[in-house]
Structures are given as C-alpha cells and as structure tokens.
Length: 267
Image (cartoon, rainbow, N blue to C red; front, side):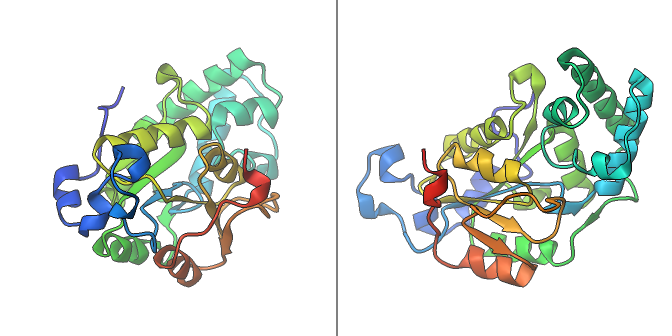
C-alpha cells in the first residue's frame, strides 16, 4: 500500500512556491472567511493518465492479450481490447468481456504482473503538447494530481519513466487491497491526499478522455474537461463541462475561470 500522501515531489516545497491564495483551505474545509481564496481560477487540477497524458493503447492491449492467454480466456478483436483502455480493468473485464468476477480479478493480477515486469515500454509516449502544458501550469502555481484507474505502482512507474512526477503533488492509482477499484474511489483518495497537505479543494477540475472520468468526478461534484484525443471512441461525454480538441484549447480552459458542473450531473 502506498504512503498516505505519496507524491512525485516534496509537497511542502511545492506548496511553498504557490501563490498564497492557493495554499489556504477553503471556508468549507478550514472554517475561514469565504474570501480567503481567489475564485477566478481552478484550485486544483486532477489528471487521468492513459489516454490523457500518455498514449499507451498499444502497450495496454498487448499486455491484456498476454494476460488473457495466461488465464485461458479468448483474446477478442482489437476494437474490443481498446474498449478496456481507461476504465478500471476489473470492471472492463466483466462488462466488456463478460468475465465472472473471480476470473476478472485473476486477469487483473496477471496483467499487472506483466506490467511490473516489463515497465513502461516503447509502445507508450506522452501526447504532444501535454508536457509543456504541465510545466506551464506548475509554474503558474496550480496544485495538480494524477487520479488513474491504473494500478498505483504502474502510475508511479509511468510518470517516473517520462520524468513527469515532479509536476504532481500526489499520484493516485487503483488499489484493490485498499478497496480502490472504481474511478470515483481513486478520485476520492486523490482529493483526500491533496486535502491532507492543505490544498484548497473548493474548485477542482478533472481532465480525462473517458466517460468513466466524467462520471467518477461527478460523484464528487467535480466538473470534467474531456480531451479530444485518447480512447473515448464515441462515448457519450456531452455532459462534460467542456471539451478540448487540442492542448491549446485545454490550456485556455485550465488557465481560465472555473466552469460549473453541468446540471445533468448534479446529484
């Protein structure tokens, strides 16, 4: 299990460099005055990993195929394998491939063992324009975190491999032993870690490519910006707060004023 606030960099050092208003807790969190924070910018940015930061589709489908062979399950066509990229694998194996829960759990364990042995490979890359955007947002003082359905060890491995870890205060992934299997669970843990080091959680935003990102964030009242790249494959993401077809537009949305959670996603 990971450390409570496992980060890619020292949180104290990162927070010490942020503008004063971004290091204070919101009134709802700390009981302070309502005007203690700046309301014209996002207070925290949560990022999905696969399909949002990294183009890892080829690597993931190759590992899933290998895991399926190990557990004795038929390997489906590529278009079905691609539907498994992004959402929690356990859910995907059940919903997409029709596996019973025990077999799905066995396959997840096989896939993660393969990933741990192989590490990030040549089939993955950071999407063009994303690394410079992360650098700019970090320089502007935005507290950022990764909230991925990938196993937490893999999240760390990928971000370390591409030398991106230092942009994030925390890097949270799925952890079945800790009961963290749904996207909403991963987001909840990422928020807990950020709140634990004093990050203002009054106006967070999620950046992702799949409907699971949107729905998981909505469970916590968080709006989502859906990116135009990744693996959404025509999913119904019309209830996203906004859509960014390229990193230029994503930059505008993240540096601009916060957006509201669409009414259709409000509890």
